[in-house]
Length: 331
Image 1 (cartoon, rainbow, N blue to C red):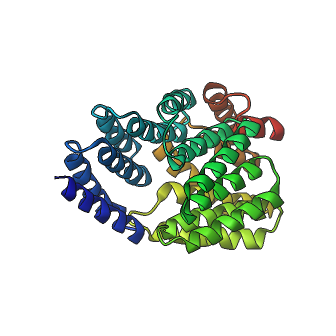
Image 2 (image 1 turned 90 degrees about the vertical axis):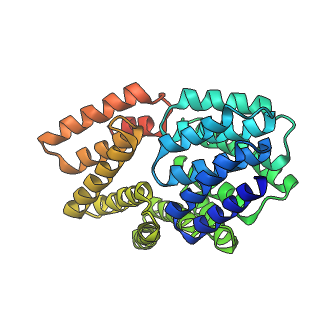
């Protein structure tokens, strides 16, 4: 039984790397079902793999269900802690920050004596949540700890790329564009060298590099990178719709600054429609797009968009959240 579960996991990972998440999901579901009667470390591995596949297929409910199914059976603290880090990530993506913090707190207790790479993953997620809620100093400290643990545990090129990607995101949030570019270029180089990374993984790093260049008003370079990333996400199976919406929003921002109003409006509306479908109508990312669209249009619709953005921020965002800060800055 355990051997069959591991074979299914290997097949799932093969299809992840090949870019076919639908096929990967079939094998991951089989692996999880078989692993429910296996050792805790195998079950945690199967649950995390299945959850990440469903997350990237834009099925967060199925991802959370896979983790909860495993969590109801697991007894080992380290395995439960690993699953809790993934639960926190799903809450974070849905902007359920209190639930993400609670899951991370529980994971922290369970992973105190875990191997360095396991604790590095926890520190990385702590940093991501801190950055997204505007606690930039805390995020930097968490990322520094993640880097120390990766060095101690012998992380892969993919692990180092993930850290560089997140450091680029933190520098971007701080509007330190040149620093963000340096981290992003390192992330792209590491990811391209990592045999375990997919083309979509590379595309995410390419996009963060594009954002760093856009911050420096190097728009032609940034636009080319966003299009490269979007093509990779469109070719994936199934297409990575959330990532495509992110790239559309970034391209709309460049169109907006350069005065291509019709292109900017079209892309803002496309990004808004996809994110509303995937994230719901009251997610902070909806507020960001609505506010940008309002600034572009300067029409009677703009007032309604601003009210919508303000209501989302008041309901869903702490005052330090980057979207809340950006809306206050832009007025």
